[in-house]
Length: 195
Ligand SMILES: C[S@@+](CC[C@H](N)C(=O)[O-])C[C@H]1O[C@@H](n2cnc3c(N)ncnc32)[C@H](O)[C@@H]1O
Image (tube, rainbow, N blue to C red; front, side, top):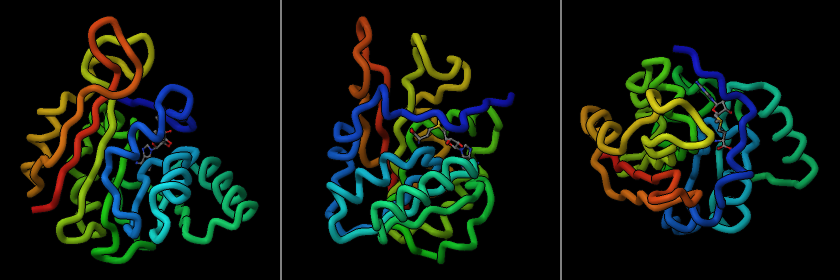
């Protein structure tokens, strides 16, 4: 199943601070916003959560990465490294064991649709440090007024099983994130650590 989600930003319906403050960053990490879109998370992270850190912003949509380049130049954001790349493939611009935290916001449902989540994890393993973390924010597997169709939403325990198979353990889960629904909120944050 193909699921197109280039140029769709979460900035209008998710609060960046609500997410970033839960990532428990020390401030000096190498962070990666994978499937960054407009890069608003990488930019906000650098501004308010990573005073001594740096961020890679990676997307396979050239328009998003070009716009990010313009923003970077205009704002002198030297510790932002924007890369046009497909994260289902190896990213040669990033060295082995380079990243402390890989973050994906509303990205992995696309990999469920395409059936290549395992490929993505295997590729990310090379660039993630020992004890590095992968943090994922996704739509909860419930019917919602917007977002991807229910059948491509991952439940947290479904993701956990996949990540366990690649040598990760779940270290955090928060299912009370995002927009208010009638009974439950729209999103969850799950964090995995390399074992
Ligand atoms: C729904 S958008 C979310 C964008 C951003 N994370 C946000 O929440 O505002 C999904 C993003 O993932 C990117 N993407 C999808 N598949 C990708 C891949 N294989 N490699 C890199 N980026 C990808 C899309 O181009 C798009 O920018």
